[in-house]
Length: 206
Image (cartoon, rainbow, N blue to C red):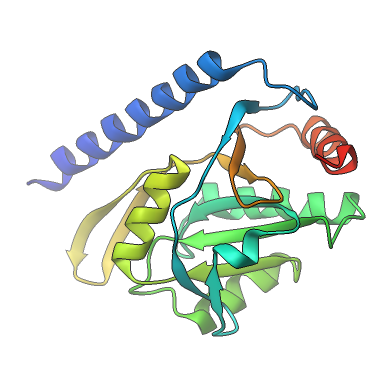
């Protein structure tokens, strides 16, 4: 498949995903509990399939690491030129505004395991904030987890095996204290509104 056609297919796939998330959010909304102005909370939190990944310190990262706190997750890759650094910048500002380090965790899920080693991930995420944890793993684990999270990504070939990019969903995914998908926040993110929404969710104790 030619690069231009591949990119077109990727864009169409990601657009379809966005429409699917929007349709699902309309179906489930309004959700019980805290209401949000910057995203959509699902009426019924959705379970996440079992996964086994590795964090940026080389430690195992599984469903168990999602329990007992809220998690704000974003999927991307460290060679991303725009969306990823912008979104991690939002995460950085959220971590500075919200005094909830134990109640709200921030996760950057790399969908580029071939280039994003734990060391590469650590250098990247800690440049933005030590509050952000980078995780990645085998391709089959990433595929299953992203499908479970309602996210999509597609590798776009370049001039060589190492020269490629990745098209991916741009939503922030919110997981509840039981590690279930609880809501989505689509860009562009208005920091004040998003911070207020997350503060209310964390304070609700749900």
